Image 1 (cartoon, rainbow, N blue to C red):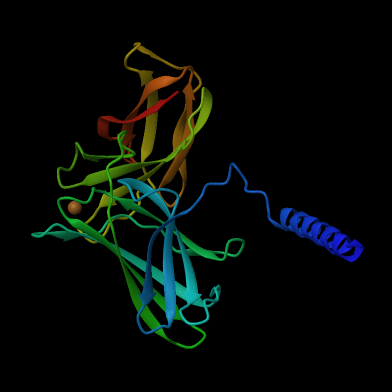
Image 2 (image 1 turned 135 degrees about the vertical axis):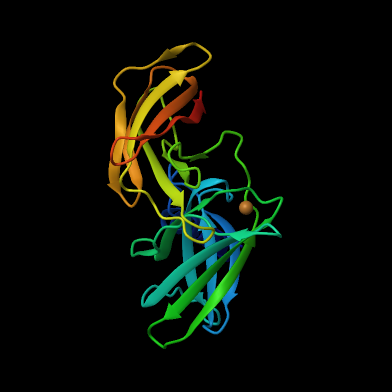
Length: 275
Ligand SMILES: [Cu+2]
């Protein structure tokens, strides 16, 4: 009887310890850290590698941050060096095919992921998007590609806008909103990426433009003070400050000039609504 009691007591003590250890070892989830969404997972044929395509949200028309995790398809081990990765997004619209703006793929040693960004310029339907991700494994010389299929949706509030130059009807420009991702009352970093469509396959960034912004609340007929015009900070990214003096619907009106000060477009805008 006494022996049984001791056994049960020991079991309870052991279980308590087990629980303690579990609690201590499991990292607390960071409520602020964005959770990556797995968009698609494919084998890079010929490399023995499996590539996972992650994103902050489901693919949308606009500037998409993209993260690749590359694993050995047999061992499951994450491959984190000596890979050269290139990407080719394509939209098949039946009669025409086209690509879209992309950024360089860079390795992030803190997350063991390869990071890039793509501006999907149209939603799926009509047409389909694919992303070909080519891997060269420098450690063994193997190379191959993974082909991802996925849908691209149009957000309720556009995160990308395009315009045709007043000076050249063949020149189309694409302005993608990067920041703010979480707008608030007060001064917000306002960052955009500007690309030009040189051809269906070539969408270079535009580093030589001048951007003047004028945030307005169309429903209330007022603007705001202390805005800072975005200036080029590299790779076609322009960064300034948009001051939102209250919550609600804001329209960031933009005046775009070329390097010589000629106006390319004076009525292009992006809307930002927040509560
Ligand atoms: Cu298209």
